[in-house]
Length: 420
Image (spheres, rainbow, N blue to C red):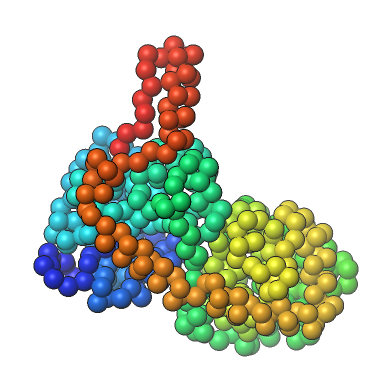
């Protein structure tokens, strides 16, 4: 890691702030993809985070990193009384590194970041990897105070539209596929190694083993498809709290011999590319899953649950099929349908790379953020101070009114609007 210093000339420093688990998954990977590809002649990234894994990965790409102590720093986000000390550290870091724009990669950091940015008259971009569906949470985490909220999909920013946030403060920048990363690895012998017959149909599913990913639905569909006489095997890549439960379910459904729990894998691209006849995701909730985007680029026909995220990520009936959520029988029928039509299956797979190239390319992803940064940096800094920068949409007034009425009913004396 290298320490930064104030620069009078040269690239503009952007501070990227992240808080999360000590791993590299969806939001972390999207952040690394972005900062690694920024035009360094224009922008100099400064990453502020507490996760050692993310810090090491960013530093390896030449990013300046300020690693916080997770025991002393980001934990204060849940303790309002302790926030001033962290704000002071950020204020000093922004001064030393001559930060000119702030990119919050998670909304949880906004209550600390917004006051610092407003005092320094710095624009703030809030990158929404998840929809903030709870009204109180949107207000409490100061999501409306970001100068621009960027959603990874249309449905992610819909709650802000519902609040009356102006369109000029909202953007959609779809996640992107790192094609170079997907080309890595080789699993041509995996079927044989796992004891899967060469002529069997292999489905691959990737995702954490948790309830919202709905791997239980996929297992039930596997059982239903095999009951129809389909020689189908499932490779399930991922780890999580439901691992034991899903293993037990496979036994109960008598499909354990046809499921391979592969755990967390770093070579999932090679697994899809070299072994998958179809790619399946039964997720009950999602934002804009990289798994669907990557499967399409790798040429695997996709069968996905019909949720908003998958409607945006998938070209329905072009590169894959959408099926009813939480419906194993519907999924089994879709599997049987394309299993019986190899030409259609091939056509769906062939369309995937075109869909990704048109809508989810890495160049498009990075360029969209660079253009946004340029727009914000070109505006007068006075627009981002306490007077002109503070912004509450119509929903805030309505929320305060309801809160006052509720407190009056409960015998309270006054309402306490959201404060930084």
